[in-house]
Image (cartoon, rainbow, N blue to C red; front, top):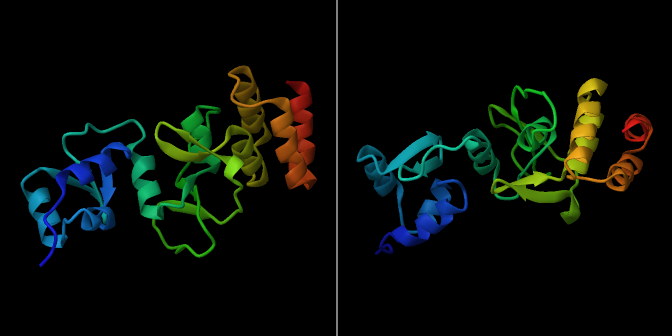
Length: 193
């Protein structure tokens, strides 16, 4: 006999994720497939993507697409690159896909997600609007390495420094870790700021 569904547990999970939860999280709270389907049909749950749902009592959020992408990518995923720049509002970049850093063992086939397998230190990750995201200095180093224009990188450096989201030292430390072109570009942009 299966456990009775725990609505409070599911609510607490969803509350931390802008009202969203995965089918796996629902299953652990006692909601099997047929019960999920029932709650979608009755309007209590909204299916936002395959395997991802939202409690309808939670309104949509400005970063709903990022929550859905993060949940699709898995609990160890971190919003990164151009998507992190947009989340921090550091430049005018408009990412065509949601960028996430995932463990090397993660599946790479998720439509609409640009998955990166770069190594992350715990100090490279922070939370913004409830989402795990690379820090501003790590984000700027990542986009510098990925070919974003120097104009947008310069805009991100200036904005991050002006708003106190990072320091010259943190940016230079990430530049040094990357080396090569990234180091050269960031050292020059930081010196100009």
